[in-house]
Amino acid sequence: MIYRNATQISFFLTLICILFTSCVSSPLTRRRGESSLSGDWMLASFTQNDITDIAPDGIIITLSLQPIGGQSTTLRGTGFSGVNNYTLSITVNQDNTFSSTNITTTMMAGSDMNTAFENAYLTMLSQVSHYILGVNAGEQTLLLTSSDGSASMKFVRNIFTGVQWKLSTYATTDRGLQQAESRKVPAPYITFGAGGRLTGSTGINRLSAEYRINTADRTLTITQPLTTQLTPPDKQTAETEQYFLEALSQAASYQSRGNSLTFLNSKGHILLTFTSN
Image 1: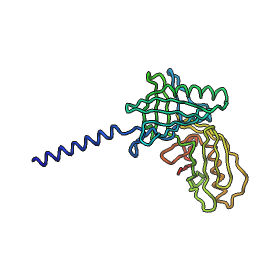
Image 2: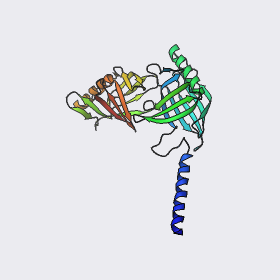
Image 3: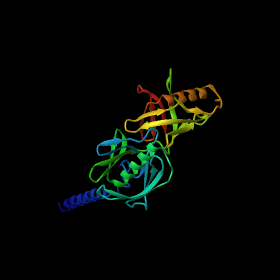
Image 4: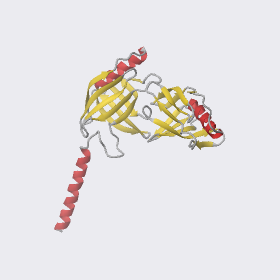
């Protein structure tokens, strides 16, 4: 009986230690599968005095957070605020509060609209003091709020800028989705620039286009891509290039999960699927 009671006590003490350890784990470095402040985010919307606003068309506002000193609770933030690149320091507390300091920016000039939005964003960023990590429709979210709740900023994981998306499948008019693999040419890919410029390759030709994205409702618009004029080596490669370019300009919305990205047309049909490394 004594041995049994001792075993039970040991078990409960171990359980308490595990629970205590998980409760005080750093918000910057969570276990695999859990959300973390660290990483790349993009602004979905911000709200101040019950008025919600989103970035001007074609502009992605970014916030990249990385810990300083390993397991410390100090983060270095960098990003693009609409016209300029910026940096800041964030000190995170265990009660989901934080303070931001030393916000500095480059000194580039931009349009009146982008400059006004940038000023509002940076001002609000200096005022928020609480954070909430969450998941919405499989997408990680970060909500920053002011201490009085009058202002908030919603971010989602940044799947666009700084990522090269390699084409996996493309839709055809008569044979459904086809694999984009080819042994003769590199796989087509695209990358999104923070200023609304999309660049990439069809596997043969370089391409560029303008894009607009709304992360709040996951809508996407891409202009007809411009390309160089090299000739594909065979019929299959030429077909892939043709369908790829047509599908880009038909994209109306997107879906993302992990390292996969899907473009859909206005009727919700899959046009293109991509993967990232």
